Image 1: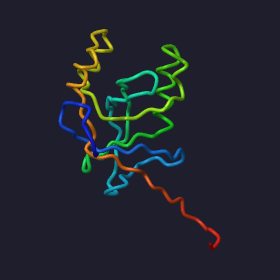
Image 2: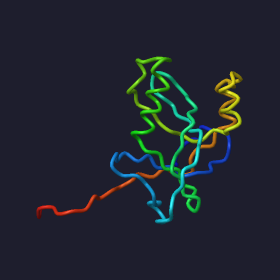
Image 3: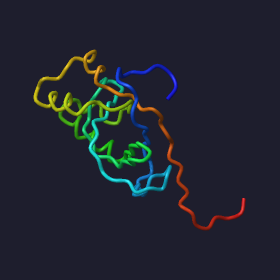
Image 4: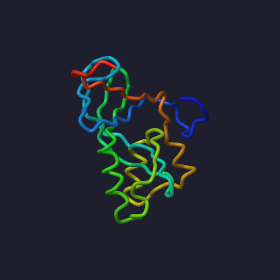
Amino acid sequence: MAGKRLGKKEPRYSFILNPHEGTRLSRCPRCEGRTHPRKFVLFIVVDGFGPLALGKTCKFCTRCALIMAHKDELEHELTIAFEKRDPAIIGNEYMVFGTVDKKVWQKGLEGEAPDIENMLDHVADFEREFDLHYDPGGWRPAE
């Protein structure tokens, strides 16, 4: 990922946000290996709100260290998170920047949330972000 890093920990995973609702990633799009579910705490910045640490089960390829989140599921989780906090935020643009240490996130759930400066000490940006290109196949007319 080009540019300045946000988190203070070393980048450790790559990331794909799957925009295709009908496509679920049971195989890694990079190595074709099997994926498995794993819980991550994603560090997300939402326009009009700011940073948010969201616990989310994503598909994961251990071989590629690749986290795969489904956009429709992630947006559903964000909607649930903002329904009571601030409904005006629902539907705003967002960006997933990296992961947060689970122990820090769990302390935040217990009411011991660190301020944003201390939170960034526990954020690891993604090493790389990929786009998912999907061809559903099938017959098409000649162009």
